[in-house]
Length: 264
Length: 261
Image 1: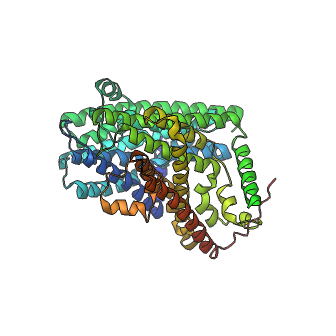
Image 2 (image 1 turned 90 degrees about the vertical axis):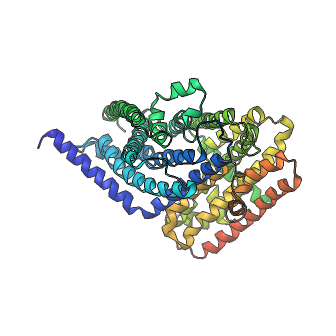
Image 3 (image 1 turned 30 degrees about the vertical axis):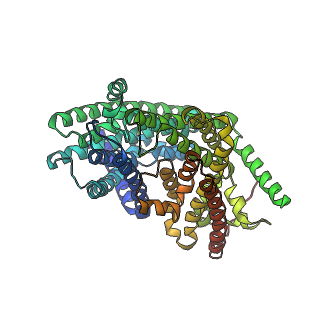
């Protein structure tokens, strides 16, 4: 077995482990489902109360939009805190001696949990949105593309969090960086207000950012699920996923070098 | 009574000293939390730029709501940061430390730590009220009073929910997430909900008293609504003590030996 195949095999084992851990945490999932329901219900009510005439969207479409963005947000959890804890407690030291890189192992394990939770929230959210709105704005043929776009969005969120977690090596506590990143994502990414409703200059600048690739692009399929729209969404997402993967690898490598040079 | 206040004052002073033990990190958290709140409000500015009316509410009303939540929540975690760990402490047997003291264990449990970023939350509130909410300096005393009362309702709601682990320890994860649930509902306008949900928000899950009712009291200059927030704070505060004391009877010691240096 080649080195790459062994690495992939080990990463897949971590991914399966993360999936099983998330599946075993039933009360955690219940809490997350409850938490996820709240913004969906709140924003659903806000959109029903909003005078949308002339906006080009209706309350049903926008409720589905929020169902998608919130599922992407809620699926990854708070991996940056776990990385921070590993660094602060020194637990990362033993992980660094293993043949699989700590960062890759962490990403793979968290990706497994994230995908499990995304699947649960996706199915639950679709049922909730159908009950709330009475419509299905996305054609069945576009559902696989939507699922893929949501998965890429959640993976982008996960990679951002891993990068923020590794910042602990330099800044001590990464929570403030996370808060700012999260709020910028909510604003530029279009958490409940789609970028199509923003002023032109913000929309044009925002649409090309990784924040939009994370939230707006997958959720925009609730507004327009044409083949051209799907291609555009996946194009942006794959581009930013590649950029994020390279960036996280660079940050993790730099942090690991620092640990080896200066200790944890 | 004087002894109790001296005890609470000493707890608070100790926690604040501990919270600011690394002053630069604490200050950074404080400033960034303030910035964080203001950045989030941009979403509402964009919303009201596009839709000037949300069933009778405008940008100023949401700014008041967000500021009141930020001030109440910030005060709560700055003074009584242990609120977020109540359920974990009970399940881990960590209450032993607090039961050994010659006072009721609840204050020392809640005031077991201070979270400096809470002061950043509090600092963002006047900006939201005065700049974005269109209020004047003369309105500050009432805003602060109602925010503190709302913060007490929030603390009470979160603690009561976390006390559930006295009876059902398996609910730990759910109980730990409860404060997020409360916060998430509080920061959004609740007048858009139908009467059934509003009834729940005024009784079973009394988050309407945290920020929604204070905003309505200020918007409508209604002293009865303002008074109802104060009464709710007293009622749910007292209920917290009752529920905690009931739960305490079911508490099994963690047999924990802790050496505090």
